[in-house]
Length: 325
Ligand code: BTN
Image (cartoon, rainbow, N blue to C red; front, side, top):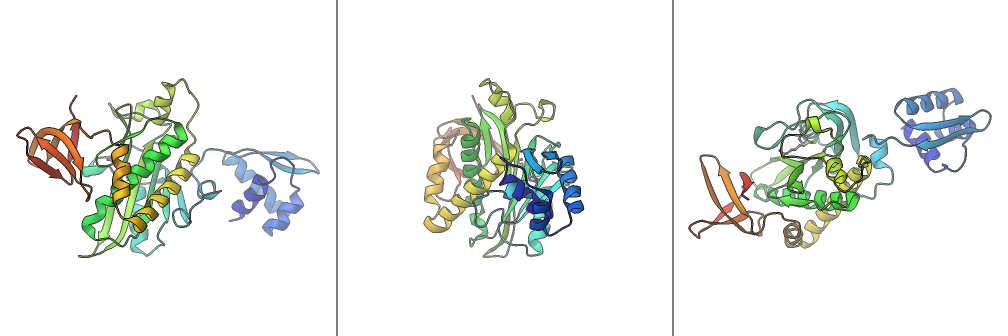
């Protein structure tokens, strides 16, 4: 809170120095306490110039996924109004589920620099090294039936795709249900978990993992990071993670509002626009069987419709889809 107050004054005055006295008045603490907080901010990576008898001036801000950084200038009403950030957790989804059980507000976001036990879909591990990736989980409480959860999953994929496109300029595409690809390589995965009664959802946790500036050695074969794909465009600097997270929260919220207001059709249309799959030949791997076919459509419940070799239409609501080239 104190950090937030001091930072906020410094941010609003980057052209000039702010005196220690003014900072201590605004924050309601002694000048020694101000100085200690400035030192802490510096240790966290903020570059703050100090001029004797004049004051302090903010020079640069680190790209850290802290609650203060994410909430700064965040234009949302629900998502991210409360952000809980960690240096390291087992899994942001696990923390989010525990907090949601305890009744935290809709829109609460859990984010970490590193995960020790990052969870992927279908029991897989999501490798989550420190510095470079985005690991975040958003708690939503939509008024939908449990069998409509895939709508939220697809909506999240649309929101993240749009954000990656707007922040990086990369041509991100969606692979059903919610992998995000750039140049056919996976850069983001989404894991949705929920608690529900028979006819209503108590809460949904949308877990989003993005390989942003993640070093190559941590990225599985066939996957990539945003930074690596930017390099192909001769852009070598890091992708700004805080800006990306803010954009994801803002876009997710506007898609969520659209779903609540206009229903699912508009989301499906957007999903189709960014789909890397319509018309593609795929192999569908389900528990106990696998078959090949061509992606025909996505229906109004978010299920993938495949035309099989024999011409039949099969609807898939979960499973692994491999693109056949
Ligand atoms: C996938 O397998 O494609 C889904 C990966 C989801 C990873 C994210 S990272 C943040 C959140 N916390 C987790 O443990 N998993 C999700």
